[in-house]
Image (cartoon, rainbow, N blue to C red; front, side):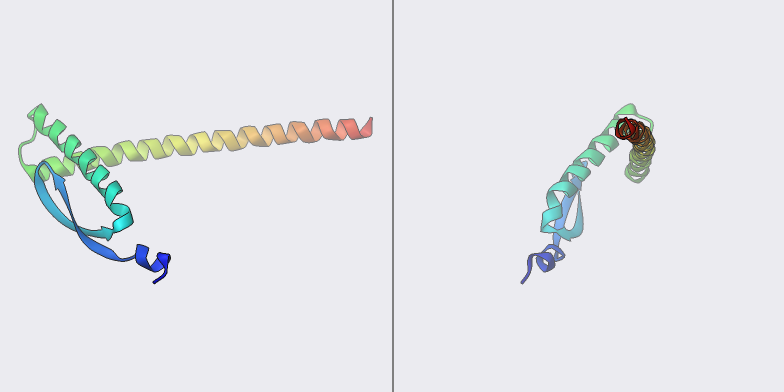
Amino acid sequence: MSTATSLKIEEPFTIKILNRKFPVKCGKNQQDQLEKAASYLSHAVQSIRDSGKLVDFERTLVMAALNITHDYLNLKEKSSDHSKTIVNRLQILREKLDTVLVDTEES
């Protein structure tokens, strides 16, 4: 069996969020990342529960997911803005270099 084929095989796997178990299927190569994600979510849920604003597990879970998604989208937008700035600066530098090279060739 090739490596590409073996990476796609999904296996039963259990994650824990606030000591509740959730069965999921994922490739073996994704289990570590999934555990990290579940741990991050579990901490977010616990933080909301500690604030005392929500008690119901499902509502707390949804609120944590919304908070994480909101943070992710903000970071993604900032990253996109930074990428655009870098591309613009590189374009300006390229134009300056082209100008200098043309001037040196003409001299």
